[in-house]
Image (cartoon, rainbow, N blue to C red; front, side, top):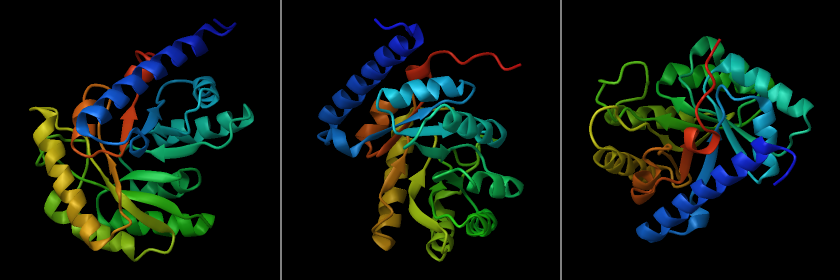
Length: 238
């Protein structure tokens, strides 16, 4: 035990999640090193980011720009370095400039207009950002989540491939609210394979969260976005 009970708690949670991921990789016949953990810290303080980084976490995600921008700045003031910041929420064109200032990876590009807005913003900041095409696996039933229909993914990917300040890294999806995640993640795997066939460097498959990470690993996820299992129940928003 240390003098920081919260750090001890996070260490235990991180170890438990790592065991789940390792077991899922073993069951799927995959190398553990091929699956990366992204800590989703939305509503949790920058102090928890600092704790996680001290425990070896290198990838941190947020889904709301206002909270993310403030947390990135606060984390830096706490001496946090070497973090790869992911923006995983729905991105609006009017937030592109703000997000482009701090995000290293944006997971939620689902239309050509948004690609153009983020490309301009990244250029203004002199940055190159890894970008994922968000795929709608719910056939439009899950309102508010965003995502391009599978048939529309190639168009968004092509727009990204033409950018100077965005790098097409792969695809992202959230399992539908209804139904088992397996068939949805299998569909995502097919979309990802199609994109890789045209763009071999687009190898990222961002899928799986606290409740379905094993299923995601079984269907080829390379990046898991884990919040609750890693950080616990979310604080109530004021």
